[in-house]
View (cartoon, rainbow, N blue to C red):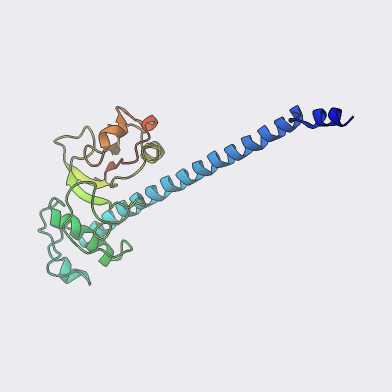
Length: 222
């Protein structure tokens, strides 16, 4: 009798196994859904940052009839801007100094929150966040007059660079959300330089399967 009971109690029944599988499925589904929500929040946050900077760029020009960073008399027109933090009024933000001044001008004029040190910012995707706004991934965003957007070689324009260290999935989703989703067309494009950008692109698409975490975008703001 005891031997029979022990044999009967060994292992799991099909119903028990089914219940366990259902629980595992629910847990995995919850994890995946949670990750999807986190990624969506990161995309929205980056989108909002880009929208805010673009709006500030145009609002500044509307108020001062000058380009932030390039404004030659910014120190006499905007409280908080020093005589050493003015541009040359050449019509573009095309020097390392002016790229750093741009954020000082925008924040001092009240168009952007935050405080920036006004240091020179090289036209790439590695601006420190004490000089440029944080893209949410630990790298600074940059305003410049350049051709960093893919397929725009020789066609310089005012550009907003997102900075790098952004996962390719976030970059691809943002492009799909606000543009055409392609790396080499539209107003949002993959970057031509900075970090491991080549591994982020399988032109004309983003190489999401590669799961590269060091990607960036260049947005044409004009």
